[in-house]
Length: 441
Image (tube, rainbow, N blue to C red):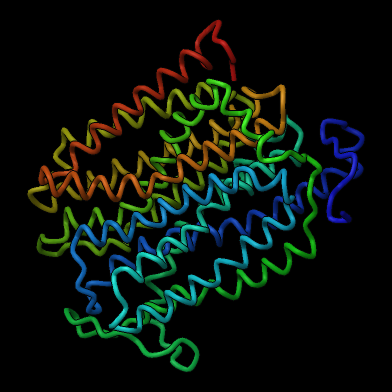
């Protein structure tokens, strides 16, 4: 019980300045660094799937989309589990265990890519287990919301989620560099790429994260403490009795679901749409820009949403996403006939990433206000909405692949996403933004 803090009251200014502030910011620092590693492992397959065909794994386009999608499916499922963990086990135990356990699938992946006998089913298992990295968000973020006073929740969650999201850019930026580095004594032999004659070391991008995960796991166990916001699993189910839980789920799917889905699908989408043209682009040269923009914007707009309110920024985000999807379709960026459309495709997708960053910060500022009567409920809603939005990578990869297989184009999928965004934007305006709305936030 010594790991549990007693008489925690961050709303008391005297307590906050004398005791609470230091503990809260130290906790935020440790859990945020761990969250970066979580996101990096979660999105590792967005890089791996682009390289597997070149080193001799004969998987179909749909199989590659499934491999990219599986961490998203697992991430969503694990987030549902994580939604309920903090009130039962506390920050210290949950963060420590969830940080260390990801070492297992990283070891599996590192050895699998060097073995030509590794099957599609085995890679699917590894991809599913790496989805544990996506699950962490739904315990780390609710934990953070209990450490800070309401006036700083937007800032704290914006920092944690935004910097945590940098893990996506980290894996997509660093991976191309690591692929060409030979550390034979430590990592093993490389894999020849038939088309270019080069040798890459795909195992590097799995093994490289083991050491920081081990370090952060040990630090978490030694340094972290838990806020006494205790509730049983059954007690926590009361969040599902509120219609606002479901409305918040919809708006967060529009923002983070789009961010995570596009982050996971973007490299493979570049390869599928533009990979057959002369001078086709290397997807990994562009993949990291979107998550980087969305992550940075989320950090910045966490503080801005504390001042402006989250609802109006979520409203603007929804409108922007709908416009961008319309432009992708109308300008032929999803049905290219030459490389001339590629700059438009990348540019519009970058704008989508920008506004998802704005919306991600804004929504997490809204939810503690919408559920201001109960910090425990607010934390639960944050975890639940994050869980459903985490299915974004799965939904985007699987249904983009299905859309292309059935119709020959990704347009039907993006039309559906546009309609969902219109619905979410209207919900946000009616209940949280317009004059006289039910719960202004």
